Image (cartoon, rainbow, N blue to C red; front, side, top):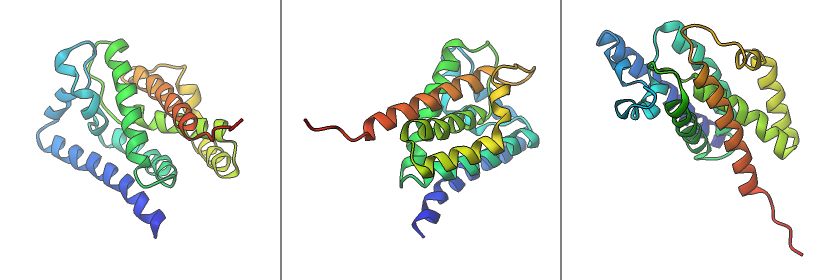
Length: 186
């Protein structure tokens, strides 16, 4: 029952994504103007808003399924873990896109998805316990194509969101491992 209540947070996040998607559809996509626009004061709120904005059904579905899977893996680590990790990935990755991204409006949760991908892999690398390694293997089997897409930019896709999301997920995994690592007493 505790595991189910933790996964509920992931469902809330994805539900918010879909609610914003339908609201955006109802207003003919005008909410996409609140996406992340690099190096622009107007684009700063997009760091928080962009993961909830999607161009079309294919876009939101391609982010929903991996978010449900990898988000649930993160949520199983603890009660507030999903929100803390996802928030850190969105802020760091979005901040990096804002600083160094191409000057067009970036929308979508794929930066968060790539961040969760790197986070799950990074946790396995640093923790080296059976559960984290097993989850990393599952994620690699399901989403190994993500690795190649980090190095092959495609038109109309925020390459920066992917790479900066991935880097932020790895950083968040490392920092959280360092904070939890038992200290040796001499």
